[in-house]
Length: 195
Image (cartoon, rainbow, N blue to C red):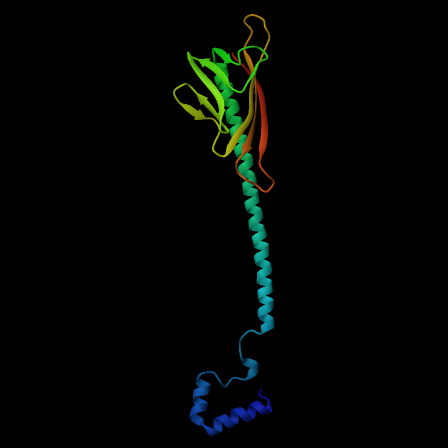
């Protein structure tokens, strides 16, 4: 329904120039103000506000997911390397014929030297990596995601003849993966004897 002003304008427009009226109706210019489509400024501001709230919530969820992933990677790399080093040392000490270093009961060393099948193996730290060397080549026991520190080997046992050679091993593994709570660190300690 047109108000009186609009009725006068549109009716006068049509009556004065019939071809212009035809062109105007062809291009949709004769619609009333109530039927015109589009968004008002208030509607646009409301939509933009809702969109920004949704984006903030989604970015916080995404950030939480990334933090959880870093936490999981750091923790799993420390535990995986710690268990692997323990099992490798346990396996090699059980196979060893003798413990060369540390030599005496109660002696503590940062290196462990074992004799297995006539070959001397040396376990030592090199730039945060626990290496095992047979004199020809050296291999890291920990992955590139972790560092090993505070490594010590202590010879324990008694002085009775034919007593088993036993070593207490302690070390700390720290993850290189940076997480929001800081670095993941775990201390390991075990005692292993020759069989």
